[in-house]
Image (cartoon, rainbow, N blue to C red):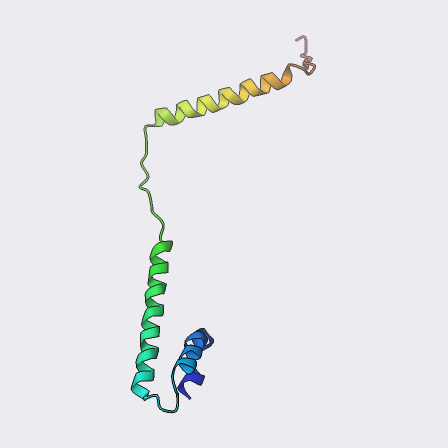
Length: 100
């Protein structure tokens, strides 16, 4: 009855106990001991998996704002150069300004 009440996650263990031991002569203490050992093993495996999933967190540091500004200027400059390079083959546009 005990083996039949266990959840589906225990199916492999139940099958192993049924095939390896004679259930008609198996003492209750031995059955419970085997099930408790399996439960402990499952919990240990879960703990190991949780520890493996933990990620390493890096500490962020704020650098001087000058380096950020230099990076921004370099980005704008490279984008402007790319824009000019793309405009070489195209007709330039002229704006008509009032003579005032």
